[in-house]
Amino acid sequence: MIAAAAVDRSGMLQTDADGQPFVREETHVVAAGVGIPTVGVPGVGWDESRSGSGSSYAAPLVAGMLALATQRYPEASGNQLVQALIHTTNGSIHEPMYEPETGYGYGAAWPATLLQSDPTSYADENPLMDRPYGIPSAEQVADAVARESGASPEDAAPAPADEDAAAAPVQADPLGPLGPAGIAVSVGLVAVVVAGIITALVIVVRRKGPRRGATP
Image (cartoon, helix red, strand yellow):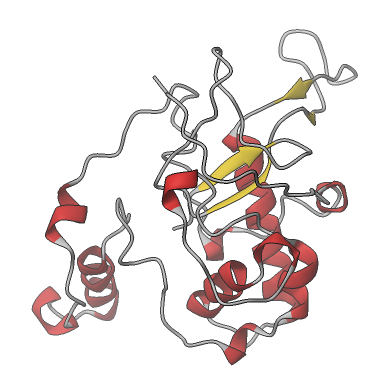
């Protein structure tokens, strides 16, 4: 599961009503999610449009990038696609650097470099399982695999889980259940969402160093 937060066209994090950036340590990547054009206005009609902001817009863009990467590299596993995602942030291919305190996680998901990097060149292991607020945990994944295969959960040999991380609560998000703290993008869930919007996702990340903001 990948947690995505929203940034504006200059690469700055979405802000709250007080102008403070939503800095969430659970964030893995960021993507465009501020001032996004939409189609249709509830109660008005589909021929009207307006702009919207929030991680609910960033999440499907990240999902669409992974869908494109899956289409281009069909032999890649879900783990390898996640590896490729965090190896190609901010417009370059590099070793991942996780900066949870900034609210950017591994950086801005970047479709051009993601599609340039063959995911099968990376280890077939999930790089996010040891992160705080990891959902699902390694034990939950092992249990699900065991039940799917018909084996008992004890036979699944789950990876060691960080008890402190597993016990840590996920904060409620003022933007609703799909806010930055809770957006989970499943690598295998995605086939439809983003063909047209992806072209609008060339964002220039001008990171001005770690910034902390108060969130409700």
